[in-house]
Image: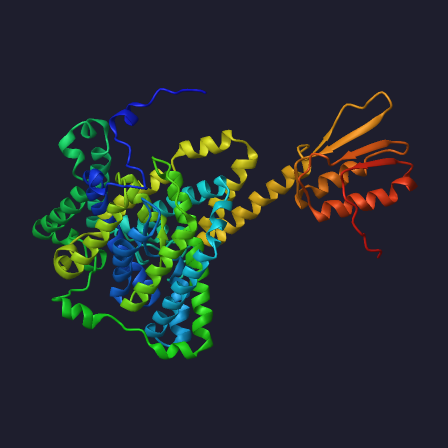
Length: 536
């Protein structure tokens, strides 16, 4: 067995306790700062998705709280973070219009959650294991690029789009690139100044000299950036009012004065919607889209996880379903596992479920106690945090690695990136999967793995041996070889080592057997069952 020398990082970082008996307090020193970073990133995302969905502003925050406080413990993932997803905004806008109220949509969200639980029990989560690695890597790289491109307008203080829009075509009529061009012509210099300083601080905080200082490692760079950005904006207001960040470019959290006022603000499900067919159509749509996004996200998170833990996909579906039922009851938007917040969690050093749980607690605390202070945070500072997260997802080294793996890995990877950039997450991944499947079919057609041609014997017998498992994907390759034999050939087709031969392949072999004598070919079948071929 090949042995490798552990890296310095591996010797200095303790391994996370096994998931069978986790000690969450053991890694609290890393999870608490990571949870704080995720909270700072999640807060404007939750608010932005609420605005884009046409839902009450609190709905997104409620969903973020449920994702952190409830789903984090039900999920089998150690590092994924759940909350409202940008991919569901278009569905929400149409749903509110179709059902007539957000309260009716809450009922559909609850039903969708129940459907996800059923899918989990039916073991439908196994579909997540069939996403090719090249497509998952392409999805991560695309999300990194989108984060960078989408945050530039917020970074410059010229944004008109909501904070976590991931689609190429925006709700305001612009697209990703035209929004950047517009932002370049309408820069808010105060926001841009704070954004640049925030980005420089984050890069400095992540540099080797700073990371060598043990005390500073306990303080997340995002927290320094947030505090610094508030202070800088207050100074601009004092000494250069013209440069002060305008209110529309600050975090906008609703002011809640008490727990009772929070309860009074929450929308309640309109149970009369259960009598309408459109409610169940919407619930099915939410369940399928949310399940696919969650499975894609946890698969991606598992690849980013430094400890390479594996998330049980069926348990994830049930956890997401329970979360959607709770969110629907409390007046929240539908939730999924979300890659942006999960990536921020991993980048910040999160080690266990505690980081997601802490982010949920902080969202709840902010809603009740910290809204006046948090509303001073410039969006350009938070955009700087996401620019760093985006770059780490789409590093040039990733592209070089995929290129070295060859065209069969590189093309699905790069096509997935381009497709997501110019459409949206699910459409882009679907296109990437189609390309990946094409290469699988092509490889099965060209490969000699399933049927080996041995060296001809002295009597010119051609001996073809089928593999242990022969599927319909191998039919084209087998038919091509059978049709290539010249007249006068003596062919032995050997299935003695095959445990399973697909019916489509058997039918093709039987058709060849029936026509072989007319072509002057002597055919001998070994352990290959004959099937009935219909005459046309």
